[in-house]
Length: 330
Ligand code: AMP
Image 1: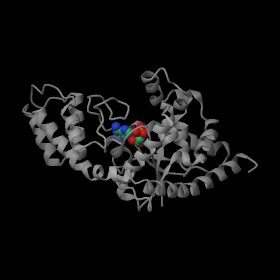
Image 2 (image 1 turned 90 degrees about the vertical axis):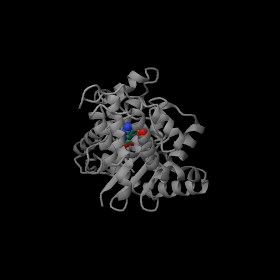
Image 3 (image 1 turned 90 degrees about the horizontal axis):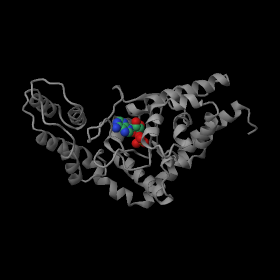
């Protein structure tokens, strides 16, 4: 059985981008792969959360993961920092990760642009921590969105470099995947490219958003004044609305609005109303479970403890092998 690892930072609630990029269809396949889902709380430290924030957001993300349908008895779901083996592998991989290649990373360059006051070493070495998460379980498939493609390439580089350096076959090559389709980028509602946690109010639809909130956000989504000639190329913001429809609406609905657009008869108000209802229909079964799970401390603690135990099994095996290969005494 192939091993799959998927992680989500504990910096905020899960949104549709996380769902379709990192989980999606994959949730239905838990029996066909050896699945690890983890909550990336080490990764969240680059934004300096308070201890209270860290603690509560880990529990919230866990509750949302479970509400999405991860079965803790089938898959392994754990908190990243519960496995200090992650931090050890991160340290070891960092010794063979070059500053030049880390600095060339698109996501790092973006962070420099967006948060010039907080360019910490954790941001620079984000790809090595991610590689540690993946290689720790010798995963070969990693469900991620398009934004993580380059990081996966770096994980392969680090895996191959380790194998070459020590003349071993310790790590397999991990690949980004999204079930036969190409990797996806779920757009935000603000006309910008990507749905994200840190992209500002109104950009993301969260799985924990109430129906009323979803309606409000979607109705405020950026569109434009409408096409003026038949079959016109769509502006970016309108393409985004259609891309969101592709994820949650039926093909008939999409065709209806495509035709309206091409005939210059589209009313974005109608389209957004439909989109909001389709998103609500999609998220309702998840949304309805989140609060009850989040309030169930007993369940959350049980799941975290079980996950830690299962994840440690494979992590400690890998770390032992790595230490031996590198020449450590123990
Ligand atoms: P993050 O929220 O940045 O921790 O990302 C966790 C996972 O969700 C990663 O696999 C990302 O690739 C994926 N993801 C986040 N935002 C999007 C998006 N807008 N579209 C597709 N995948 C996304």
